[in-house]
Length: 159
Image 1 (cartoon, rainbow, N blue to C red):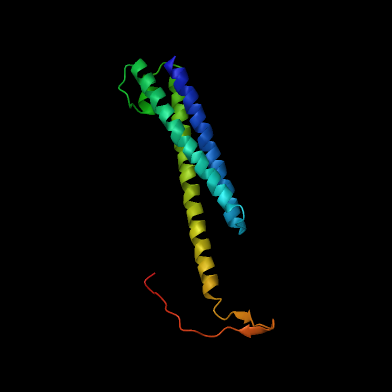
Image 2 (tube, rainbow, N blue to C red):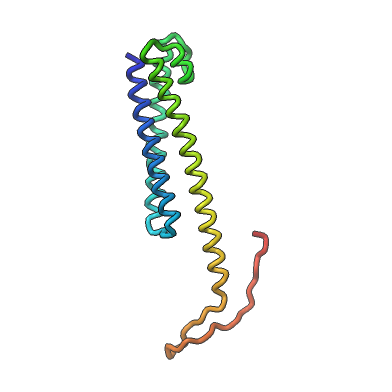
């Protein structure tokens, strides 16, 4: 039955969205800890889950169009429209999927925005730290600490 196939695809997508939420929370914990050693791994895992979601979206579109035709609707019908025309218990199940997608999407959006802000703050702090390292001592040929020579610097203030 097309509605059963659609439901299976929707469960798979929900699981992927929950996994994405988990991976974003992991990334946020790394960002807030100030230890960036694993940040590239966390970001790569987020990207991997996003790729899986994109691939699953194609399967969802096909399953939804098949279910829509089965219900006498046009392909491309929304999940709300499918739920409205589906018999019980599919109508409630499709509404529950729709509500879960809306909730997960909102959570993911908030967490992704927070992570982007944390990355911006971290980048700014790194730039400020590097800018404060102007009076750096170096070592001479004998291994003694020697202040570096002042040289002219060109500063581009357009940033």
